[in-house]
Length: 490
Image (tube, rainbow, N blue to C red):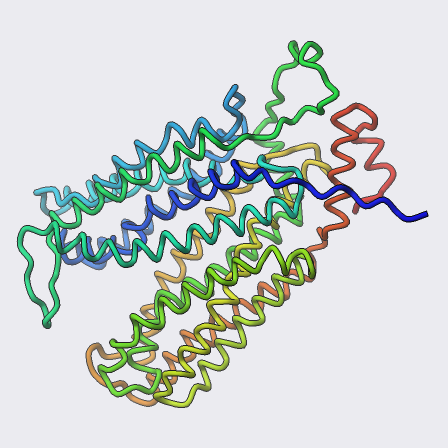
């Protein structure tokens, strides 16, 4: 007798589209901070490098407290709107306000100016954490099927890449258009404080309805089984686990720790490379200085576009190869692209673009990490009886912030330690140093993320079995103790 295959889960199309809009809203809301905050602080607000470093350090220390705290608060939320959607509806206007305040050049001086910039940035980071954790966690409540979640994540990453491409083209134009006094520096127009302020207002306001559409149209799945009637559930109060139990379960969930570590180490490699890529293209790719500047407008879009194409293919590859093998395959492509770039013959633009395209396509594999976290949350619910979507995604968010902080603190000093001198051709030893920092170091970090996946064992068969077990548990056919005693899932 032929074995009955489980029915293919149906994609919640309306929720998937709304989620993609909301996830893209994250990139819209944070685009000014991510792309222009440093230059705004130095060129417009006139903060010193030491002051900026102090602001970033204090903000990251606060993130270590704030991110898990917000995740725990969200996990303990139970409303008729669900667990995540209330925060996606309420927090965005506050995020927009702090975004605008962060790009406001207040007429202050000295320590007062630094403190005000710090408070605005921390306020922006706190409200961003609320929205980001809620949106990231919501994907785990749109379907119980692991592959369907992966498809929704791929769809949202494609939308994110598209919106970043649009913002990359439009925001620089807005900065100049809204500036009251535009000065020429080395032949290029430089925006003023009013340009940054108006661009921040427009970008922030646009993001608000994107989040509201997500909160309005996304439908969270119910935790109770369909067979349980509303009458039987009317006196049942939502379970609120103690924070200590949640943290203990999180630490014990080795699959979640592996997923978060992969996010951290992979993000550190990619962020380090992308933040320092300008130095490589301009000074170390073999082009006569300053010709490399002309190719930045080609290399960056090629990487972004190919990453978007890679995200288009993820549903196909994850269905054929499984998520773990697809992750390894895509990250191997990243490493190949980086190694080719390291040995790139000097001044070959076609090879530079081709290898960058391979790296960009492979970088789409990082999107799978979101699905790893989703699966690890389901595993933790099965194994320990604790389901903390918000806390888990908050820790993932904190991992990315830590990676950003480390690369920001170490990357540029390493470039200078290699002998870098601004605005002039570099010595051969410096070129080699930049090449190693921008290509080999990220390749090693990505390789580490691949090696760590050897200990990740949540494949598609195991996730399907977990889904069956959790359904039986919700319907009262088996208890958690009975299921664990059988030892079907290690």
